[in-house]
Image (cartoon, rainbow, N blue to C red; front, side, top):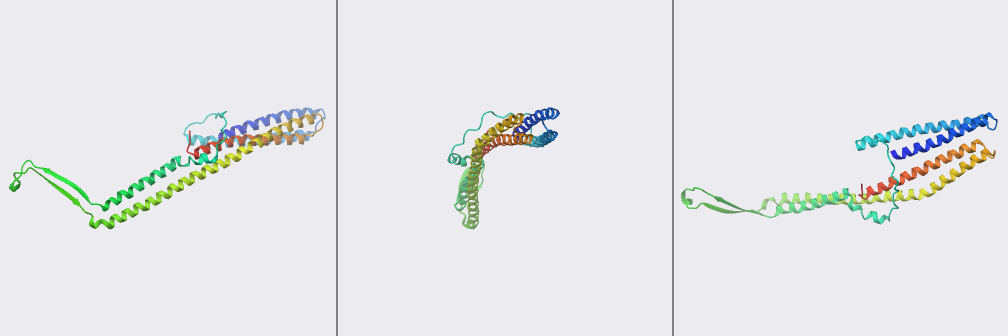
Length: 275
């Protein structure tokens, strides 16, 4: 978001510079009577609108910078865009196959395994416990005076604990069912996140080429309008409208490129592939 705002500011500054040149030319043409004063006023009005847009985007950039500093805990300077463009995404199935590798899904699967082991642990309460106890004596009296050790086998049969053990086993089974449902939910949520990110990325990629063509056509139109105006074949309103179209087309194209990168990394995060 911060990088997108920075690019937007640069585009608007370029439009402002073009308007400055336009206003300068119009002033000269008004003086010699080739243009009307209202044409200069219209260009100046559009110039001030661009100034207002720049200030608006600068405010959005400052907000995005503060949010990034809050998330990272560090001051953020200039952001450099990577010249490497995201690769063309693979088939959807290749990403869905990685859904179970996401950390939240793996954590849910581990919790299910722990719940399954807890059932086995609680079932052990049905079985008797046996223990061997031995003692050694340094001195004894009476009939045991000649024996310096003894041993005993202790067997604990949980005859009266069956109800308590059954309750513990049922509780563990209930927790296992809950853990299983949470694992299924985590996996389905992971797959849904992947599908959403993939569909949005694919749709934005399909918009990139038309937006680029629209930007190039708008630039050609603007240059043509300038030539026509110099030869009195177009009026100033046509030139300003063409410049506005060029501005919108350029901003839409740059935003689409930024959105492609954002959605690509969203897809990587959805599959559990982070930096």
